[in-house]
Image 1 (cartoon, rainbow, N blue to C red):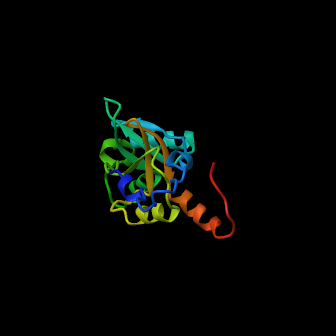
Image 2 (image 1 turned 90 degrees about the vertical axis):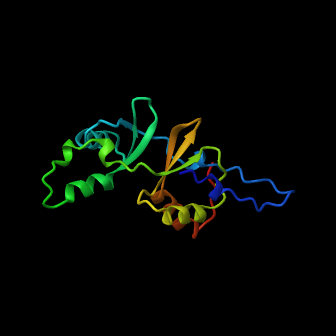
Image 3 (image 1 turned 180 degrees about the vertical axis):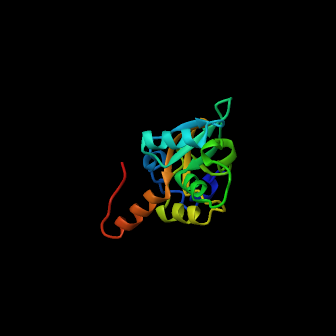
Length: 160
């Protein structure tokens, strides 16, 4: 699901210049991928190796087909009375297929607007994949947006 239309602000008058801050500016460039057939055990190892809470899933054509978070892994482990060994499940069986995506050059009009979009999202994934030419190049986490929101109350800042 693309959120470009939601986040663009068309209310600027004809003489004003749009802000220059774009999603690439606030995104983490550290993105990691696994194949759809990767087991949960391998995914957890990749998360630990890269100190990340998010892994994107690719198919044989190198197309991103889903996203896996540490929360998904924790929920699998926490299930009681489930005879399935979660380590043997594959990425394509546990991934969220629908997650938020936005083009890298989409202007960031408001941190509050991004926060609202994440909170009102129908899925539980609190991350936005940043796309350039059809490829995931970055990630914006709700945690990061919350930090910006909290600290922006106390002082002014700009992201460069």
